Amino acid sequence: MPAAFGKCFDPAGSRFGIPTYPWRYAPDGLATRRQLRARGLRPGGQPIAAQVLRPRSRRGPLVAYLYRVDRAKPVRPMTPGKRAALAKAMCARRTCPQCRTDAGYVIPTSLGMCVPCAYPDTPTPS
Image (cartoon, rainbow, N blue to C red; front, side, top):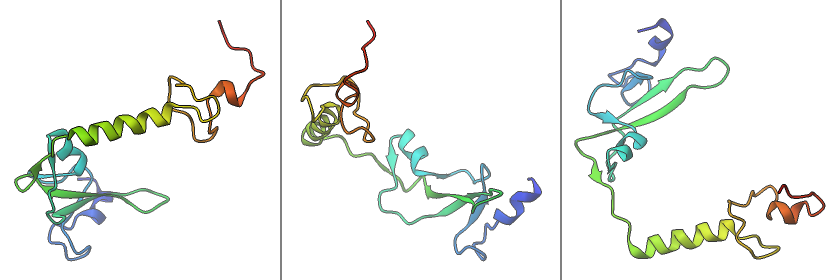
Protein backbone atom coordinates (compact mmCIF):
# COMPACT_ATOMS: atom_id res chain seq x y z
CA MET A 1 0.00 0.00 0.00
CA PRO A 2 1.47 3.41 -0.94
CA ALA A 3 2.51 5.71 1.92
CA ALA A 4 -0.09 8.35 0.97
CA PHE A 5 -2.83 5.83 1.70
CA GLY A 6 -1.60 5.41 5.28
CA LYS A 7 -3.61 8.47 6.29
CA CYS A 8 -6.76 6.78 5.03
CA PHE A 9 -6.24 3.40 6.67
CA ASP A 10 -8.28 3.08 9.88
CA PRO A 11 -9.98 -0.35 9.98
CA ALA A 12 -10.82 0.01 13.70
CA GLY A 13 -12.63 3.31 13.16
CA SER A 14 -10.77 5.14 15.92
CA ARG A 15 -9.85 8.21 13.83
CA PHE A 16 -12.93 8.68 11.63
CA GLY A 17 -15.63 7.00 13.73
CA ILE A 18 -16.27 4.25 11.18
CA PRO A 19 -13.86 1.79 9.57
CA THR A 20 -11.96 3.59 6.83
CA TYR A 21 -9.96 2.12 3.97
CA PRO A 22 -7.91 3.62 1.14
CA TRP A 23 -9.41 3.76 -2.35
CA ARG A 24 -9.61 0.25 -3.91
CA TYR A 25 -8.52 -1.47 -0.67
CA ALA A 26 -11.93 -2.19 0.86
CA PRO A 27 -12.44 -5.76 2.11
CA ASP A 28 -14.69 -8.23 0.33
CA GLY A 29 -18.33 -8.16 1.34
CA LEU A 30 -18.61 -4.36 1.24
CA ALA A 31 -19.82 -2.34 -1.74
CA THR A 32 -20.80 1.23 -2.66
CA ARG A 33 -24.35 2.11 -3.71
CA ARG A 34 -23.29 2.05 -7.36
CA GLN A 35 -21.71 -1.38 -7.01
CA LEU A 36 -24.83 -2.68 -5.25
CA ARG A 37 -27.01 -1.30 -8.03
CA ALA A 38 -24.89 -3.06 -10.66
CA ARG A 39 -25.68 -6.32 -8.84
CA GLY A 40 -29.39 -5.52 -8.71
CA LEU A 41 -29.31 -4.65 -5.00
CA ARG A 42 -29.95 -1.63 -2.75
CA PRO A 43 -28.77 -0.81 0.80
CA GLY A 44 -32.28 -1.36 2.14
CA GLY A 45 -32.08 0.86 5.22
CA GLN A 46 -28.91 -0.61 6.68
CA PRO A 47 -26.40 1.75 8.31
CA ILE A 48 -23.11 2.66 6.66
CA ALA A 49 -20.63 -0.13 7.40
CA ALA A 50 -17.41 1.62 6.36
CA GLN A 51 -15.99 4.22 4.03
CA VAL A 52 -13.20 4.50 1.49
CA LEU A 53 -11.15 7.68 1.12
CA ARG A 54 -9.22 8.82 -1.91
CA PRO A 55 -6.76 11.57 -1.01
CA ARG A 56 -6.43 14.59 -3.28
CA SER A 57 -3.63 17.11 -3.25
CA ARG A 58 -5.50 20.43 -3.28
CA ARG A 59 -8.89 19.59 -1.80
CA GLY A 60 -10.37 17.27 0.78
CA PRO A 61 -10.46 13.54 0.08
CA LEU A 62 -13.17 11.88 -1.97
CA VAL A 63 -15.41 9.73 0.21
CA ALA A 64 -17.48 6.70 -0.77
CA TYR A 65 -19.65 4.96 1.79
CA LEU A 66 -19.74 1.18 1.89
CA TYR A 67 -22.62 -1.14 2.74
CA ARG A 68 -22.67 -4.83 3.56
CA VAL A 69 -23.58 -6.96 0.55
CA ASP A 70 -25.10 -9.75 2.65
CA ARG A 71 -27.62 -7.31 4.18
CA ALA A 72 -28.56 -5.65 0.87
CA LYS A 73 -32.04 -6.13 -0.51
CA PRO A 74 -33.13 -6.55 -4.12
CA VAL A 75 -34.04 -3.42 -6.10
CA ARG A 76 -37.74 -2.73 -6.12
CA PRO A 77 -39.36 -3.44 -9.48
CA MET A 78 -40.57 -0.53 -11.59
CA THR A 79 -44.33 -0.02 -11.22
CA PRO A 80 -46.50 0.96 -14.19
CA GLY A 81 -47.28 4.32 -12.54
CA LYS A 82 -43.61 5.14 -12.01
CA ARG A 83 -42.76 4.09 -15.56
CA ALA A 84 -45.50 6.38 -16.92
CA ALA A 85 -44.32 9.29 -14.73
CA LEU A 86 -40.72 8.89 -15.94
CA ALA A 87 -41.83 8.75 -19.57
CA LYS A 88 -43.87 11.92 -19.10
CA ALA A 89 -40.93 13.70 -17.42
CA MET A 90 -38.56 12.72 -20.23
CA CYS A 91 -41.07 13.94 -22.82
CA ALA A 92 -41.27 17.30 -21.02
CA ARG A 93 -37.47 17.62 -21.10
CA ARG A 94 -37.50 17.16 -24.89
CA THR A 95 -40.42 19.53 -25.65
CA CYS A 96 -39.52 23.11 -26.50
CA PRO A 97 -41.63 25.61 -24.51
CA GLN A 98 -41.36 28.15 -27.35
CA CYS A 99 -42.51 26.14 -30.40
CA ARG A 100 -44.08 23.17 -28.52
CA THR A 101 -42.38 20.52 -30.66
CA ASP A 102 -40.30 17.51 -29.73
CA ALA A 103 -36.71 18.66 -30.27
CA GLY A 104 -35.36 15.12 -30.57
CA TYR A 105 -32.88 15.78 -27.73
CA VAL A 106 -33.00 17.01 -24.15
CA ILE A 107 -33.38 20.81 -24.16
CA PRO A 108 -30.33 22.44 -22.50
CA THR A 109 -31.30 24.35 -19.36
CA SER A 110 -28.83 27.07 -20.34
CA LEU A 111 -30.94 27.86 -23.43
CA GLY A 112 -34.38 27.07 -22.07
CA MET A 113 -35.59 26.30 -25.60
CA CYS A 114 -34.54 24.29 -28.63
CA VAL A 115 -31.56 25.48 -30.67
CA PRO A 116 -33.60 26.70 -33.71
CA CYS A 117 -35.76 28.85 -31.40
CA ALA A 118 -32.74 30.17 -29.51
CA TYR A 119 -30.81 31.05 -32.69
CA PRO A 120 -33.42 31.71 -35.42
CA ASP A 121 -30.99 33.46 -37.80
CA THR A 122 -28.54 30.56 -37.96
CA PRO A 123 -28.97 28.46 -41.12
CA THR A 124 -29.64 24.79 -40.51
CA PRO A 125 -27.30 22.28 -42.21
CA SER A 126 -28.88 20.23 -44.99
